[in-house]
Amino acid sequence: MNAVIVDTNVIITANDEAEHASPDCVERCQKRIKQILDQQETSLVDDGWRILKEYKRYVNLETRKGIGDLFVKTLLQNLMRRQAICTMVRINPLDGSDTDFEEFPTTEALSDFDVADRKFIAVAIAYERDENKKATILQALDTKWEPFRKAFEQEGLQIDFLCPSENEA
Image (cartoon, rainbow, N blue to C red; front, top):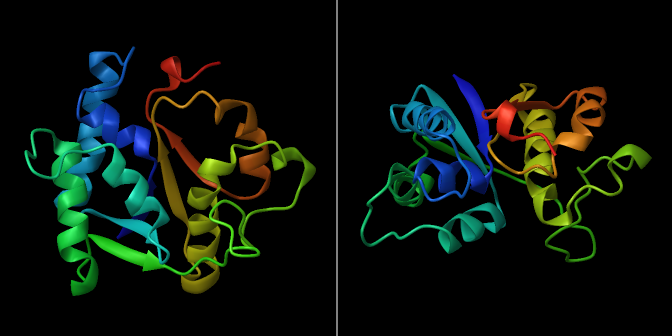
């Protein structure tokens, strides 16, 4: 089963709450979330709950109106059940930080990468370290990722830009 790390903007877009998202982009994000819910892919989160805490800030777990809301609620319900829908990955914060991690590459090419998104990269690298398998990071509309595309490739990271025409800076 493929492992994926879902950037928060994919959830927001899947809920059809992202500004400037085309109907095609919304549909692509919804399809990938549905694949996880159908257990065709497994979602990876960090053991410090950094990713889940971020997800919770952008969804409404009470109404479950959108597929993104349902996704996060399902992750939370199944996290400790060790089911295929979600796997927790250990990442190591540097000096108690919630934004800098041992696993994040120290290359100059990634030194300016958004600190708030480093947890997603750290989870991908830690998963490969622990499981000897690659995980794909799902990215929708965050244009801050695009300038680092070559650096990600050089680090062996797999990023699936779900909305490529809308992801250009």
